[in-house]
Image: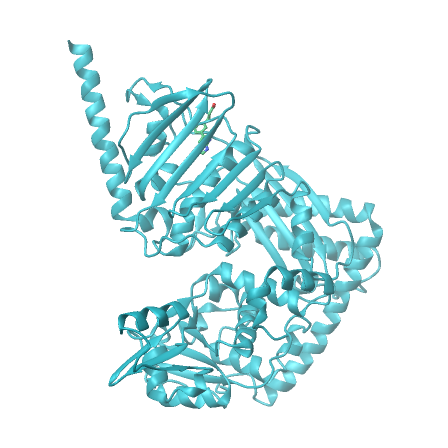
Length: 638
Ligand code: 0RA
């Protein structure tokens, strides 16, 4: 029968297409999820959650539950409409199977609205499926519950109705494929951070995270949305006004939402999202926001007599001192740029955000004159400090402390001038610094010992920070400058490696340096240039056999392998200083033997949060934090 024949042919053709699609994803996972390290692994969860969030945005879903299983699986459930299950006339397969196995962009299952194509997000659940050892999906829809199981992307059961259902929704359970990922252990704080963020961005949703490995469940629901987000970011700071400014507007098809609050500090904390994706490298939306802030505050200040004459004006840095802000835009066809696809490229968005925020902010300030006065007074003060700092800098410059040839005296530089192979070790303490100098490969490894207490970055303006010896030597050695003048092409070492003791002071200095990088040189972290050296905690010796252990578990494993404690000398290192140069080199510094951990944006973000809470003025958040994180903070001296 010709008709049936052609349908069978269509089915075969589509099956082959599906297999090829899955193979393509498994062959080049990085193309779809960015990488196969911890970051790519967590991306699997975010991809499924994003699909549930799409249901929230469609007004069809209020609850999302994420469960990290003891078996290494992750389950994401929602009470949305459920993935459609009806037969697709051409493919002769249930819609669900199509969603789970092939690109659905542009098909009738494409849900339209603000999709996140082009980035690493929005690649589709089929990518999660292809990269999972197994995946099980349950859908409640049309009064039925349906079930299907896949292995490495291919269906191993047909879609089956397994019983009646009185509600609707989707549950996707998957176990990442260990032959694809370098690590398959989900990190709770990482997942928690993203879910919390999503709950602020989508105030209609309640998101629950259950970690069955620890038995801990947390629920995130923030009806106050972006305003509450900003309050949360400022929880350890002293806000200059309450409640935060909240603006919402639309230009063409772009939806623009922003919440703004200032604190009495000097830093700019602006988080920017495009279709719920954190654009850590900024982009046109952030440029538009900054332009709007500068323009509106200058206009307001001039109109209300805070600025004299035409030539006096506030710079972008002036109006961003003490700013805490969350910008969330929804763009129909976002173009994400850069290595990590974390920068918005759409040129039209700059004007849209600038125009919307300028208009709404001007209105707001007219209606809230006391807020207007506070903001302008703060910015004018910043402008005066900037002028004083410029004069101070001139002085320093003339004394030859900052510029060309003025590399810090304590820096033991390397010979190579090829930044891409050069490494800078920031070493805590002079004694460890000395050992590191002896143990390094001077061709490409530079050592900068850091001495003394580094200034509290939280309280200090940029100009005061520059007066601190240690900070200045770190900045000069790295070479890229800070803030608006940052120029990554001047980076002198492509690896910046923090090497500190695994004790109180060590963790203090790590938190502080990460905070400095996060605040003043975020690109350095975003582009993956910052690392933490892993020094061993123990040296084990039995006869002529020597091994190093980097954790208590590793020590116990080695002791086991060596047949117990008998005849084994276990030395516990209390600091880097206890190793000689060769030991330090082979355990911690030499490529091929050492292990370095690359600092992620999330790590730096958490360091910043910890720093803010521990160094901030507010006592209550500090007490709360220490209670919550008693174990980690136990060895942190502040
Ligand atoms: C395709 C179309 C529709 C919903 C979904 C997919 C959907 C996917 C996921 C993934 C996780 N949870 C999900 N929930 C829904 C639209 C359904 C309709 O129009 O009824």
